[in-house]
Amino acid sequence: MNIEINLIPPRKKKSNFLLYSFFIIFIVTILISSLLFLQIQAKKDSILSLEKERQQIQKLVEMENSKLDEAQITSSTDILYETITKVEKERIDSVPLLSHLISLLSERGFFESIDYQLDGDVQLSVQFDSSRDAAYYLHELLQSPFLTDAKILSITAKEEIEDGDKNKQEKVLPRYTASYQLSLNKAYIKEMQSEGGSE
Image (cartoon, rainbow, N blue to C red):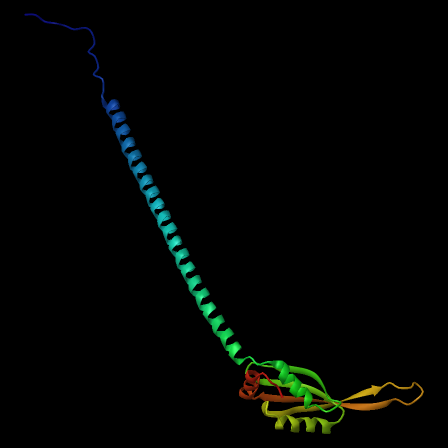
């Protein structure tokens, strides 16, 4: 019988645990990195698609706004054209009217202001030397074929000092300002304009 005696200490088996752990950690790190990379790419793609969608929506909004602006310009143009047409139809020549109103004034009557409105109403402010002149002018206005109605709104008296000789006592002269409201007879005035005459 043979007996073998081995006096060399037995070799320790190398543990593969460390190698396996590094390998597992490496694989897990690669998997986690891949997942993070894929999520980042998905977010980037999502952001890009949202940006493209935002740009498309912005272009659509701009197109709709331009269409709306064109529609508003067209409607504004139509409104302006209608207004111009209406003004042209309602327009009357003011020179014959003013000449007629002046011809009805007394010798010492003066216009202070006149305000004509498109609907045919005229506000007139006239200065006279006496209140009788204001009443006379109203009478003349009521007889005029250019007007359908005339009324006095107010009569106010103002005192004006007549400067004469310095040694003489100053004389105070009242001046009367009458405000009238007149309604024009547009049909008659347009007829006169079409005939080319004035009264």
